[in-house]
Amino acid sequence: MEGSPQEFKLDKELVKKAWPFVYLIQAYHRHRIYGLEHIPQQGRTLLVVNHSLATYDILLLAAEVIKYTNRVPRGLGDRLLFKLPILSKWIKEMGVVEGKMSSAHSILEQEGLALVAPGGMREALRPTTERYQLRWAKRRGFCRLALETQSPLILAACPGADDLYTVYSNRLTKIAYRNLKIPIPLLRGWGPTLLPRPIQLTHVLSEPIIPATIAGNTPTESQVTELHEEVQDVMEKTMAIAGLRNPEAVL
Image (cartoon, rainbow, N blue to C red):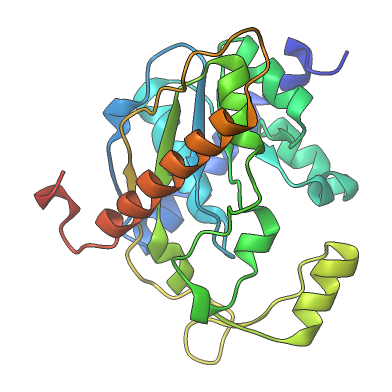
């Protein structure tokens, strides 16, 4: 049955095996995080993140959330990932589910912690000339979800992840994404290599945003729009704080 507790069962041994890799990239990027206290120890919550091309900054965030709260964020992954047999099996065992509204509803209705990157692949593929920018203009489903399930939203910003690679604007990337929804970026990492740059990565988490109470289970378009505008505004401010050398000075 779609969205059943069994679908969301973790392979705990596989998660444990991932920790050495997590520790390695935490050390490589001198990862630091602020605002973990905003995540509740229990209850439905929607954790919203910006999307970099590297993507593994989300793994660093999830690892810290697990250590701090003993809760596992259930990531809502791009559908393309679930069309690749080996990768699909691995990410499912790590707790990622296909990014469908039905799956997201199930996680939250089971009082879980759902993690979503509204910008998706489109945001991840944006060129370096557009780094630190959100591509959420038409991505409002997560706000509708928060209203329908009455789930608080916590925003986690890590703008520095956009500096791990230089991503070049080019026709191949645009055509592949527009027609096939396949990521084919043209990029460069540390020097002339594809190794991500060893820059410091910083996550800052916002205080919870509580969605407005709605009549029945269906929010109006104006309610969705209002929440979307509030979330974007808070995320942009949170990203600005995360980009500071000393975020704690303003937190």
